Length: 456
Image 1 (cartoon, one colour):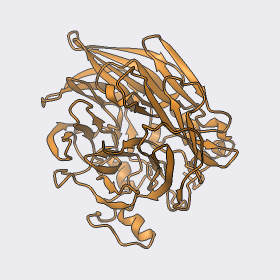
Image 2: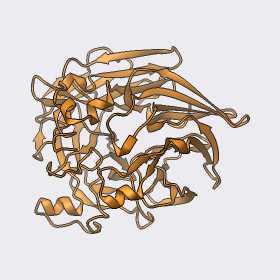
Image 3: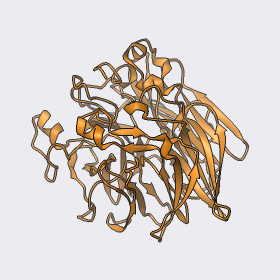
Image 4: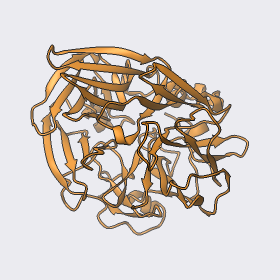
C-alpha cells in the first residue's frame, strides 16, 4: 500500500491541532443540547510508512462544545500514546505502555462514569481524555481491566452498565466484560476461541450477549511478517452466531452463511427468538487486503432458539455503514434505524490508480432513516461533495416518540474546504437543518463518535 492510499481525498489527514471559540452558526442550536459532540478517527503523523492502513493511523478526536444555544468551541487533538507524545516532543503520559504494546486509539470515543475514553480494539487499552480533549493517561478502569478493551461497547440504558466483547491477535479466547455505572469491571467471562476470530462488534439484548464468529481470523503468520493487516479470511471454516446468557458462561452457537459484520444496528428478544439487525458484507479481508471486497447491506438475522435455525433477510440493499438507533432503545425492539450511505467500500480501500481518480462525491454524501414498521427508508442527500460519516442520535430531554431527538454529524463543505457540524431533527429528517455549526477546519472521514451530555 503506497503513501497515497488510503490517506487522500476525504481521508487526507490534517496536520495541525486547532482551538477555536464562538463558532458561527446558521440556524438555531436547540437549547437542550448541552454537551460535547466528539468523533474519533485515524490521522497518521507520518504518511511514509508503507504499512499504513486505516486501522493503523494514530487517533485524533474532533469535538464541538454546545451550551446555551452557542457553539462555544471546536478542538481537534491527537490521542497521546507514548509514540505520539514522543513524536510531538512531549512527556510520555503516566501508564503508557512500551512501544509495540501501546497505541493511540482511533476508532471510537465515549463517555462513561464521568470519563471520556478513546477506544480501539485488538488488545489495546482505552485512553482517558479531559473535557478539553487533552490526553490524561491509559485507562484500566481502576485496576480492574486485565488486558485490552474494545471499540464497540454497548451501554444498557436501563442498568447503566457498559457491556463489551474484546479480542486480541494472539489470544485464544474472546472476553465478555461488564463495566459498572461507576466505572469498575464487575464481570468477566473468557470464551474459548482457539482459532482467534476477529470480533469487531457484537450485539446486546435483554437476555443475551450476541457473538459473531465469522471467517475473519487473526493471522499469526501475518503478524510475525509485519504485514499491514494481520487478519485473514478463512471462508471454509464457516460462520456462526452465538448466544451467551447475560449471567451465564456457556455459548450456544447457530450456523449462518459466511459473511462479515463490522457493525450492529441493534438487537432484541422476541419470545423464543432473537432479532439482530446488522450491516452485512459477503466477504472481507480477502488475501490480507481491505480492497476488492464486497458491498455492505442492511440485513436481519432471526435466531429461533426453539428450532435452532437462523433466518437471514435483506432489509435494505443500498450500500450503507455506521448504523445506529436511539440509545434509549438499545437491546430492546426498535422502530427506527439510521445509517450513512457508502456508495462503494472500494472507494475507501481500493488500489492507488482507482483512488486517484475518485471525486469527492464518490464518498458518502447521504444519510438514511429506516422505518421498520412502515417498511420505508428516507434518504437525506447532502449535496455533491458534502461527504459525511456516522450520524449520532441524541434523544430529546422529554420522553416521547422513539424518533424524537436529533441527529448530529460532521459534513464536509466543499465550498469552504472545511467541515460543518450539522444538527437535524430526527422527525423532520429531510427538512432543513435545525443548525449548522461552521468549523474552522476540515474533519477527515473517520470512524465513530458520541454525544456526551453535561451532567444533569
